[in-house]
Image 1 (cartoon, helix red, strand yellow):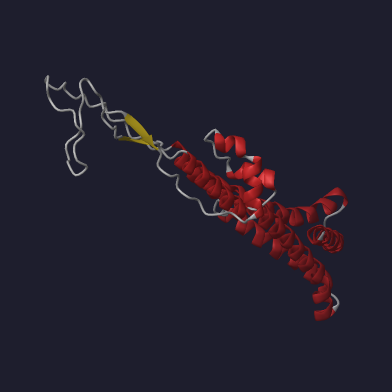
Image 2: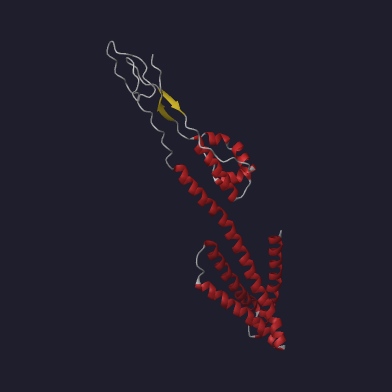
Length: 268
C-alpha cells in the first residue's frame, strides 16, 4: 500500500511539473525565433534526454553493469538545459522570478530520479531472494550428489576343519581364546544392528509439519529442496533452510548401515 501510494504521488507530481516546465520552455523557444511544430517539439528534446538517460542508468543497475559514462553525461546535460530554460523564463521578473521559474524543472528532475531509484531498489530486492535460495539449494545438491556411505561388507564364514576321530568335543573354557569347532561346523553370522544416530528432538511446529508432509520422500531417501519447503510451508528462506537441515538429518539417520559380526554358537 505504501509503495503504491508513493508511486502514484510521484507520478502525479511529476506530471504537473512536466507540464509547467514544458510551458516555460515553450515560451522561451518562441521568444527566441522558433514557431509552429518546431516550437512544441524543442522542449520535448530537453525533458526526453533526462528521461532516456535515467532509463539507461536504470537498466545498467538492473543488469548489475557499470553505468555508461555517456548516460551520465547526457543526464547532467539534460538537467542543466532544463533548469537553464526555466530560469531564463523567470529571469525577466527578477531573481525571485528566476527561482520560481526553475522550481518546476527541479521538481521534475527529482521526481524522475526518485521514481527510477524506487524501481531500481525493487528489482534488486526481488532478484536477491532467489539468488540466495539458489546458492543454498546448490550447496544442498552437492551434498545430495555425494556418494552415500558404503555399508561394511559381511565377513565370510570361517570354515573349521573336522576333528580327528576320538578327539574330544568338549566345550572349552570361557577364558580360552580359541574358536570352538565341531566336525564340518561353520561359524554362523548374527546381524548386529548398530543403533541409529539420534537426531535432536524437534519442538518446532514447522519441522513437525514438514516431517508429516514429506514423510514419503524421507522414507524413499529423498530430501525436498528449499524452494519446495518454502512453497509448501509458506515460510522464509532461513526457516526453510533450518527445516531442510532437520529433514536431511532424519534421512541420514535412516540410512545408517548395518554391520555384521561373528556370533557365538554353543557346540554340542
